[in-house]
Image 1 (tube, rainbow, N blue to C red):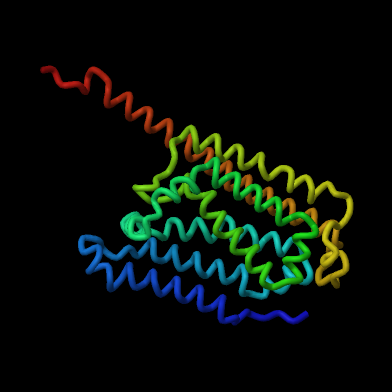
Image 2 (image 1 turned 180 degrees about the horizontal axis):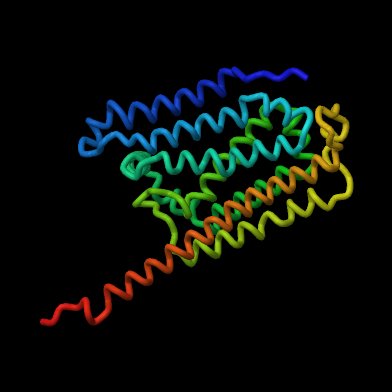
Length: 269
């Protein structure tokens, strides 16, 4: 087993260019385009942690293990690209930087459409399900270009899926609390078919992993079941955490509205 950190020009250049552009626009050029804004240290740290997470997912030895040996490692890759990296990068984009970028690219209308939970959620669920069809999954393992495209779709659609719940943007903002709660519940339900397909198949579904040498004491079927469990546990932790947070915030907002509109707080003319 040869484990190495990837140094492909496309991967390294993509990460370095994105990191450089973020540094330039949030640093030196901030004084030109956003003179009233201060440098956001916290968001910057989160953004770069997101880039590091992307590299760990697709550039560390985890990628070699995921391609050649363990389905559960590949699912761990997907969870890093779908949840961890997008969350860090979404919170790493200050509203002033994100909104000005959206306006300059004239992307407000298309982002409003793509980040609509009905559109983004359906796209993510459909593509995520599609990639786990054995024939397509095997093609991605065999062809590096297809594998890169698979990871790109996981990451980009992960951002679209998470945007309505977490974005800091003011011009393409988070959706209302009822829409958020319904959307999160439906996303949980949407992953159930893939989870059931992986964990209750009764046999290994992907020949690459069925015939791969065992680098740990885990047979192909149990490795596949473990991958399904990793997927569902991460999804449930994320979804239930957001459901609880949004219920709490919604209740607090309603409580504040009641206080503000109570007769005691009204001025007598």
